[in-house]
Amino acid sequence: MMNHRFNEAFEMLMGHEGGYVNHPNDPGGATCYGITERVARKNGYTGDMRHLPLETARNIARRLWWDRYLCDDLPSSIALQIFDIAFNGGHPVRWLQLAIGVNADGIMGPLTLQAAHQADPRQVILRLNAYRLTYYTALKNWPHFGRGWANRVAGNLLRGAQ
Image 1 (cartoon, rainbow, N blue to C red):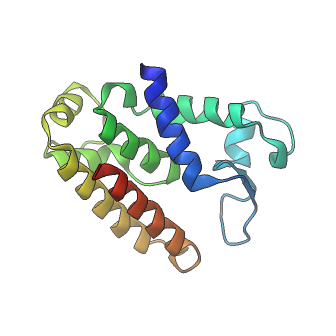
Image 2: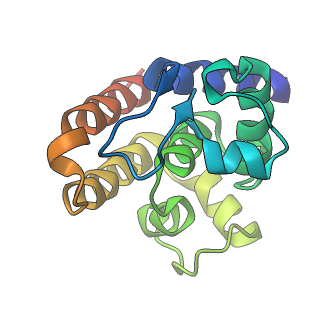
């Protein structure tokens, strides 16, 4: 079951990310499936970024962003949001803690997990994406990537409303 949750989240993520890009205004440089070359190399991939296997991207995403943020231990709808925030950039744990009303220490511990299970997931999703939009609009790359980021947040809000 947990693998199913990750696979669903990864498919959602790939709906936002797509394949190979190397945009001159993106500080991440060469990227495939949202995995930057720096992250791919750090995780053992030595090939051309244009040919990064999807399975390699999946394994990296699982280890660095799903497992690291304990998404298997969060309510499913909240886990999808935390995974996407962690993958795309931001402060997923601190924002979750602010959204659920616990001390925002940035540590995904038992109190945060318990409070996440007791919170109204729709309210949490609304708050997470509000923090996210505020964060995005303050980034210097907003003029170049803001439309895509706003569409990503809109997609996440629609998904959260299901």
